[in-house]
Length: 71
Image 1: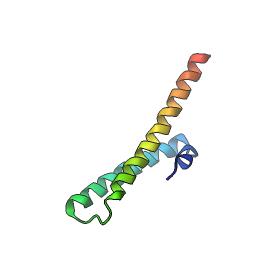
Image 2: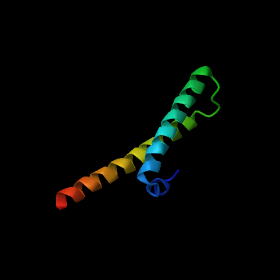
Image 3: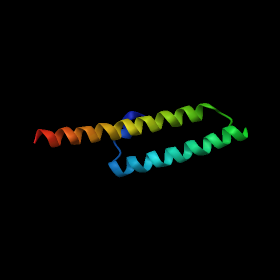
């Protein structure tokens, strides 16, 4: 998932995506502890995707706050 993909999501879709990614991360962590995870990089990539989504979410919140102050 690229940052452009994330920026094209609506606010609701972005929140939903964060929730999905966090639940996926939980599943991956359980698999890692059980020894069922083949590729450990999946956890790393999932964490990065969560960070991208949260970054865009915070950018939008700050932009709305600044827009409210400017008026």
